[in-house]
Length: 245
Image (tube, rainbow, N blue to C red):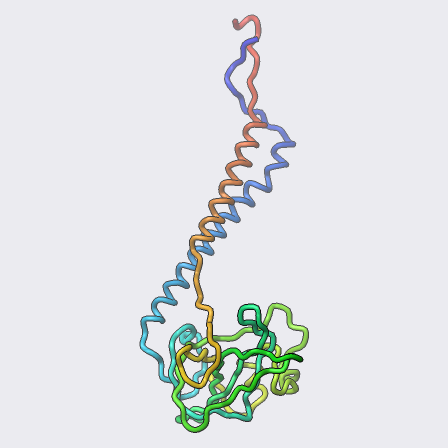
């Protein structure tokens, strides 16, 4: 039996099977390309702020968005009685705490939260001693905006006022609710080489543009495969009648 060329025949079942997956795969691919563009912009911001000279923190700031990831310098005195620890911080395989010590700025009197690094936990989950430098100090580090965990079982200003010297997590807003002094709207990650700190292996942001580009290629590949299957199920060869031979 001889056949004519392939002809498209609309079929409901293949159409219904692939009506959702193909647009979905294409949409997910476009979304990953958009994520790659966002990460590329983020990488540009990091590079631009790393190239800037350190910002000297004196007066109280209203917003720290432009300072995030930039190096900052401040002078003042640590407020020993307001030091506290962030629980559940790990360094390699060891559990411990981050030491947060407010610095009272010399010029404005506002408080600047300084993360002075990690200390190990002793048996019983008690921290080792975290001595505080006395007198006037000049500190330098990178500005960061701490955020709460995805799931918060207990939180809010009222809860923070009762946490005392050990906090489960930190935001600047929570700390500001526990004191009467003005508070700078960011946290300083003390430079690894600066004196007066502890273990400081800060994670550097690393926008992975290539990762999202790879995901986009995968989703577009799935869309092509799905389209090919749809066309394979929708085209058929029609036989030639005896009168046409």
